[in-house]
Image 1 (tube, one colour):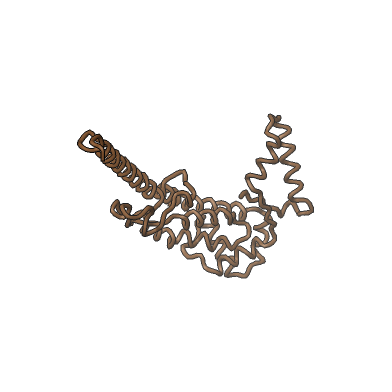
Image 2 (cartoon, rainbow, N blue to C red; image 1 turned 90 degrees about the vertical axis):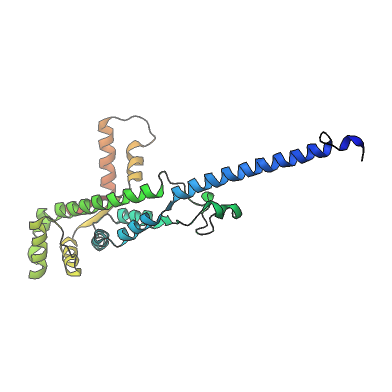
Length: 249
């Protein structure tokens, strides 16, 4: 080797310094990756405490009540399905550590891959909190929907067609203005029989928006009313208007 390639100032020393700098840069990138991945993992996964809350929600009597009420044709079932899907999508992993990511690119416990999962607008624990609040609102809405339908004169006229026990259960429900603590199959069947003469017409919010806004250009109130009326007429054509009940999905 020529003299210029040796010594502290030679090319060998420069190469060693370059390798050392490269290793430092790579280590810095690795640490940055670990911190970024940990942050995304915490956002996307429930911890131990949140997992207990999810389990409690899955076994909640309010969710059981909603599932039983969903057997009634006029209930907004897609709302419950969306709730259950959102709850099922919440995954739990509280085992990941920085040491795990020293030797693995992804979590070895839940195999979280950010690119393979939908990036939720809110962290998993926030979604769980929202669902915990939503279940009360949903049950209250469904209960009020039942009340409003059962108190209609056309439905009230059918009460006498029920068997005495079924009529008593429905009467107690209307008198207490709250659902029984235990939604028995007999109570659900009584409601089904009472409402069986009604026709459910479902409207998707997206479809309604399309009909009302059309090409997105400004419209007058009169035009909006006409579009809405024409749309409802098309959906309920041939149906007994007094027996039709519209459900927004």
